[in-house]
Image (cartoon, rainbow, N blue to C red; front, side, top):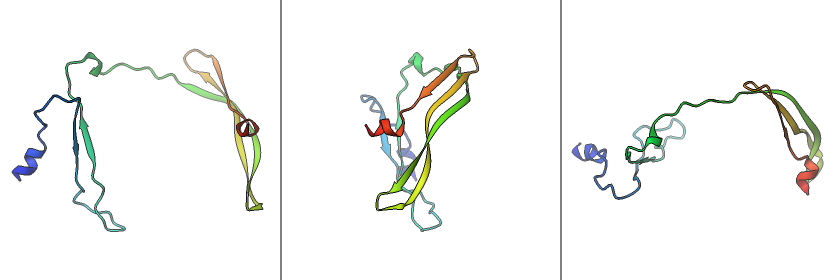
Length: 116
């Protein structure tokens, strides 16, 4: 039990950038198939009083989709042309910014342009 408790104590050697340790398989098993889970790993980065570690206030810029354009292309099985699907390939999406009311258009290459 002491060995397990000591393993959780961080290393005293602070010469490196971080402490890295490997875990071991968990004690519980998956239901099907019955096997132990994979071992994990963890990285503990030292704190040196850096101001960048402080939480920052963030602002997420929200956009609403206004419209989209697409082309419909036929994708065939190369071995059997009778097996195919029709796919909508998006070529343009327009968004409206909630904060500034500006429209932003994102243009994507068509299937023909992707082949070239």
